Length: 421
Image (cartoon, rainbow, N blue to C red; front, side):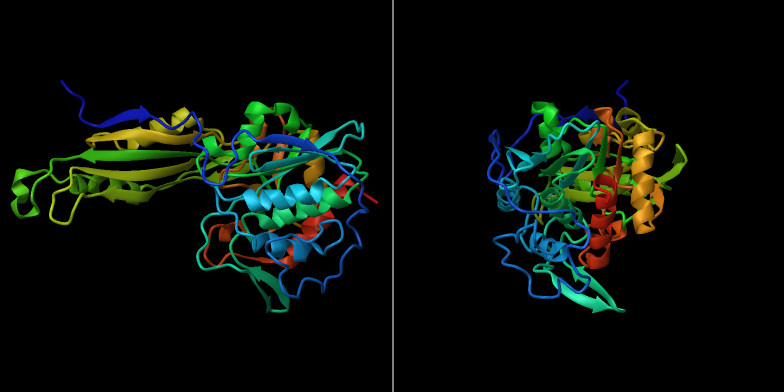
């Protein structure tokens, strides 16, 4: 007897289609003349950054400019996923004149490394891309309740972290650890496009290290590990007919109703992993169906996103979705699947980093609900944490905004760890 229920397929998990603006296999290395630059402390004043945004076509010199001016200029240079080339060009231009750095590039990802012979190597990484702009660029600098706040796309996720990393990469010429600075593309889209993933697959030696920090938004606290994520498309099938003679067809859109009902009724779990509690979520994030307004649709697809605790594997997550939709006549196609990462704070090196960073900012330690590339570093055996400016609850929101003081605080905290006075 034929099984009536969800039928599982997996597609789109391998291979890469270069997005617009991606330069594919472009790889090169540069090291050029010296430029002045010193440690971060004392380099700026807390009243800087209130002038007009620099020319968005060119970033200010990260070795000498105020980090908030740099932050605003980076935000005002649009870099929606697949369109990061201009920002990558500017970062490469800014770092190739630093004598203490070796600079490599793969596509629209830029890697800069010190080689000072230190006993340990730290990787500091952040993605250049943002979700689509929603009439929220150029940025706007406001004063709210006595606090300076930068509004606009990317101010939270995660150009504050990029600005901090770029500023310190240029300034910290003599850190106590060797440092690898990674600026990569295509984090906000399917995982097979991820620039850091491309580096790991083709040049893993570029990102080796003893500990890693992702500049993802944490409001200056530490967010350990991350949830995993899968995207699954549930497709119902019907039969076309003229809508005036609907009885001759079968409506696939109507058949999607039970899928939506189960997702709407779903109660997400909270799972404790190594002392941190991760909240899961499972939602419909898209729906498509219909041919014309006078035809009965013969197919309807519901895209489902499941964010699951790092103690769950992608295969277990897919099985959970299949079980949730059991008995509904639909096909399930997995279009993206990446596991999460455990907190990793049992690593002495990572715990020491977390203690230094939170001591400098006054931030707290908690879980990361979204997926970040700490998971990719975890796969490499490199303990990693999330630390950066911006409230993660505002990530991807149209009213994205970040207090500029958090950008300064994170820069000072990373300096206290990487190049203490």
